[in-house]
Amino acid sequence: MTFIQLEFLVFFALVFTSYWLLRDRRHQNLLLAVSSAVFYGWVHPWFLLLLYGSAVTDYLVGLAMERKPHQKGALLTLSMAINLGMLGTFKYFDFFVENLTTALGTLGISSGLEPLGLFFPVGISFYTFQTMSYTIDVYRGELKPRANFLDYVVFVSFFPQLVAGPVERASNLIPQFERERVFSWDACRTGMNLAMWGAFKKVVIADTIALYVNKVYLLKEPAGPLLWAAALGFAIQILTDFSGYTDIARGTARALGIELMQNFDHPYLAVNPSEFWKRWHISFSSWIRDYLYIPLGGSRGGQLGVLKSTFGAMTLSGLWHGASWNFVAWGVYHAALLTGYRYVTPRIPATLRKGVFGRASAVLIMFGFTVVGWMIFRETHTDRLIRAFTINPVQATPDEWLATVVLLGICLVCSLPLFVALAIETWVTPRMQNSPWNLTAQTTTWAVLTLVIFVFTRSTVNDFIYFQF
Image 1 (tube, rainbow, N blue to C red):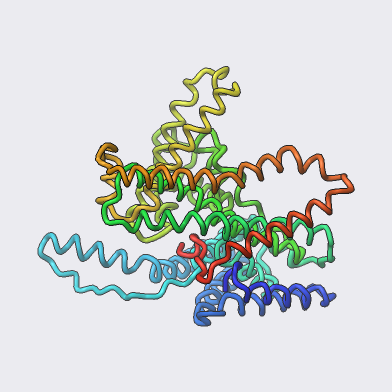
Image 2 (cartoon, helix red, strand yellow):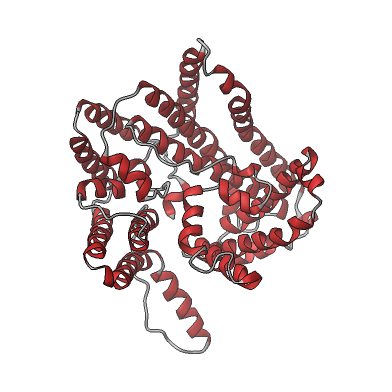
């Protein structure tokens, strides 16, 4: 079950109505726990075994840390071993076997190992990171372990953000499940705004441009210009697809009286890589910072220490996205960007950096670097990826040049709603807050978005991109 299926609309309507008819938060939490199990196990009920296996492990480890503080280190190691072992088995075991077999094969040695061919459980990367952050925070003394299993398991399995985030912190989410929630029309209204806009971005923009981008990447030998136009299209697709999911998650959660953290903040307006990672997938990038980058040394240890921490954290974050070398290369690429900008930016005059022209130029340059990164991220064929950076554009045929121009035009058209939304958010919304026409404008917008979504809805549903991670 996904957010853009009719089944979800019926499911959420039933949950929403039942939820607010219940007056006691414990009954509401029980409903959320049951409905989250239904949502996650809708197609593959066995997914629940892994979810609750991870949840129970870290729940018990947290309580044990409180009772046996002298064994905290061993308990944390146990938690990490179980969670990462589960994640590694389902996500990386076949990748490891295939690469080991290839490496040994070049030496004439048989590894004797065979891929398991395991089915990848949706959302496993997200909820394992979320439960691990719980035990790590308890270990650090930053969080008190919870004895109420129901409150804790709702934190782990809360269905709006279970499959693709945001990767929530226990310190933010658990207290919300521990207190009484009161129905709010304003929360429902703003939640509806978020959810409708998220559905629009997914169905109308992301799924539309995906039709053309995917066709290019299915070509055996696409011309360089066409491949780069597809990379630009993918930059639009992945932003609208992933932020669309997050907006629906935050909107539906808000309607239930739960506030999830902001996960995107106009990332393509960033002027440098550091700012980009403060705007893109914020919950994950902050997780990498707090639980990888800083423990690896962070900014301590001089330039060499920063280099080690940056490349270590970003390489692992790339590998988190999937068992493929292009994801590793993507992580290394962003580590190189962060390092390069760290040395170059201080040498640019402040008057140039802070001026309007300087900032606009910085945004365009950073966006160009981001598109290059998305090329590495999207292209899984190493030979084609190498060719994309070396091919001579004049080798494209007239038809391929025409296809490139058409795809660039599609990119422009699909970007227009994002520019319009940014303008409305910047200049119109602040002025409409106290206007008597505010509600009328919002309901009209909902009607228009619903109509457009209905028109663009297809018989086949494209999964959200980050479901595969």
